[in-house]
Image 1 (cartoon, rainbow, N blue to C red):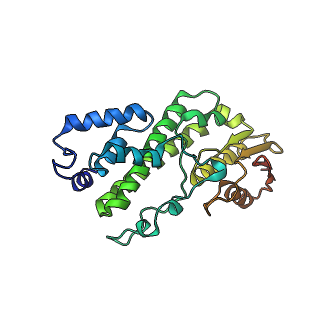
Image 2: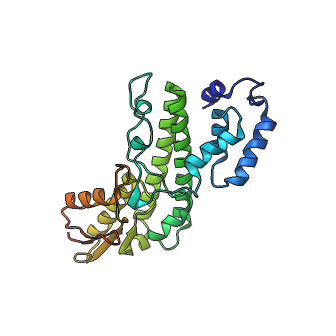
Image 3: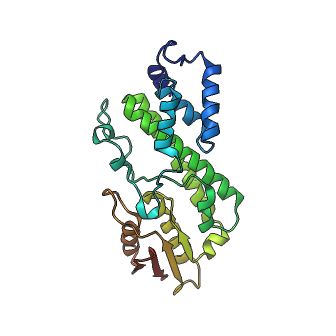
Amino acid sequence: MGEIEANLGGEADRNDWTEHNTLHSKFKVQELKKKYPSVDDNVISDLLSQADGDTSLAQDFIVSLFDPRRNEPSAGSDQDAKASWPASCREHPQTGGECRSHESGTVSRSVVMVDGLVDNSTQVNRTLADASIAYQNYESRLFLAQRARTPEAYQNCERSKKEYDDLFNEVLRLLSKDITFHQKTSVDLHGYTVEDALKLVSLKLDCEERTDGRSGRRIEFITGRGKSTGGSVKIRPRVEEYLRERQYQPRTDNLGGVINIVIHK
C-alpha cells in the first residue's frame, strides 16, 4: 500500500498530507478513530491517503464502507461485491486478470454473530473478530485498488482477501472441534457472505453425518427471507441449492426465512 499511498497522497501543500508529516497524520487518524472505533487504524490511514488528507472526504469513505448506521446487509439481503462496484473496475486494467471474483456481502462488524454457533469460546470469538477486521481491510483495499488501478494495488487486495480467508478457515477448524457447535440444532447465517455461509452449512452437515445416532435429527439454518433487492445474490436460494446437492430435501418457512432438513447418513 505504500506505493499507492505515495501516488495518491499528494504533495506537502495538499492538506499537508505527506509521509513525513506523521504527527499531523496520526492526529487525523485518531480523530476519525474516536468517531469510528470499530474501523481499523490502518484502514483509516489508507482512506485518508486516498482522500489526500481531507478528513471530511475520508469520513465519507468510512461511512460508505463501514458505518453501522447505514443499512447493513444481512443473510436475507446479501450484497454481491461484483454488483456493488463498477464493471470497469472489476477487470484488472493492467494485466487483464480479475481481482478475485467472489460472492461477498459484508461480514458482521461484531463477534456477536458467533452466538449462533457456539455457547462460549474465547478462541473462536477472537479469531472471528480478527477475521472481521481483515475483511474491513480487504474492502478498503479493494476500494483503493479500483481507484488506483495498478497491479500493486490489486496484489494488495488479493493479499488482504487471502488473510481473511485464512482466518475464516481457522474459525471453521475451531468450530469442527467445538462440542457445542456439534450439539446445536440451529445455525444462524445472518451477517455472513454467501461463500462463508455455505462453508458453515457444509461444516455443520459434515459434523452431523459423521456422528453416530444423528440420523433423523432436525437441523435448521436461519437465512432470512431473501427478498430480491438490486439483483444481488441471496443466501437462502444458494443454501437451498447446496442442500439439494447434498441429497437433502430442504423445507423453507418463507415467512421466517428458516430452512429445515432431516439428517441422513
